[in-house]
Image 1 (cartoon, one colour):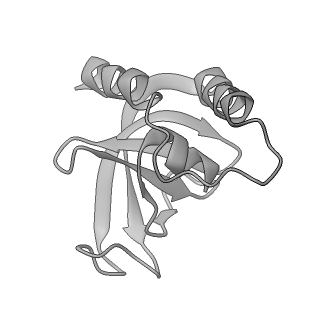
Image 2 (image 1 turned 180 degrees about the vertical axis):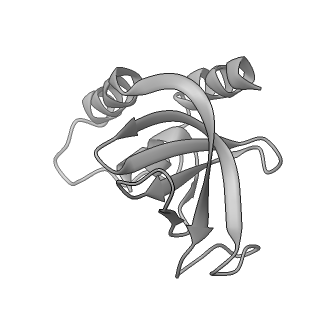
Amino acid sequence: MKSFAIKKLEVGLNDTSGLYVPPDTDRELFFSELRDEILSHTCDPFMVSATVVPPAFPDIKAGERIEGCCVAHYKGYWLIYNMEQDTFYCFWGTDVEHLSAPGISGSPLYCWSS
């Protein structure tokens, strides 16, 4: 599972769909810097869970717990791969035992830029 999560991250770093790029910004440089930032905070994957908070997800209600494999984290920001949903989630919080999941999911670049 752990090496699979890293492989999904590596592939997912090429998905730029749905990302907001500020006006007058070099798109390729923006994506490259975002990729570099994620890679600089990549960790040995480990399982973590979070409580879903509003606005939640279309198929997961606020208050439910979700889990996945953490592939990168930095200052209260956690990039999680969930194998069951085959997607990445953004978890927030500074205490690994009390993380929240605010309803952000999709590609690694999308989650990290949110």
